[in-house]
Length: 155
Image 1 (tube, one colour):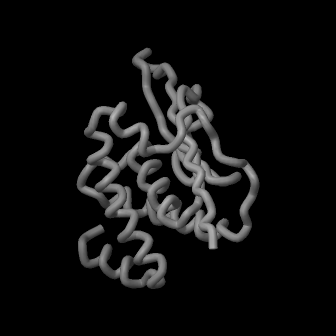
Image 2 (cartoon, rainbow, N blue to C red; image 1 turned 45 degrees about the vertical axis):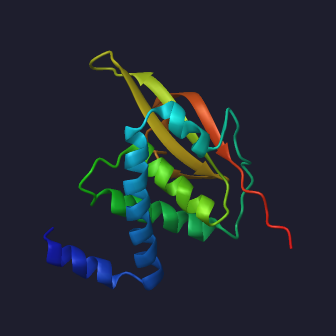
């Protein structure tokens, strides 16, 4: 798809979705920078290690969660840097954090069936919904979780 066709598709989106796609593009860039840093330095910003957020269904945020997921997936296909599972999960987590919505980032490992080498995967869950990485998560053993619980504002 050439640039003009991409621009037409982007401009045909509703304004709210265009803003989400632009925001996710920015967070994907930020997450890619974080991925290049030593993980021990990045990990504290991902939430509490070895904790998970609630699995309770939050119908009030469900539509927004789907929109954030869609925006991150859409934007990740059009970045000129690598925007795979960990970058997408961090970007979506930061977008939810900005909206004061909790989430859990999962890191998993598995043995590649062809090469026998260790491979890794990351995915993000908020409530009962998996925003990123859900299609591959069943192939991996969870080795780390980072729960980002957002406290409610006091009036």
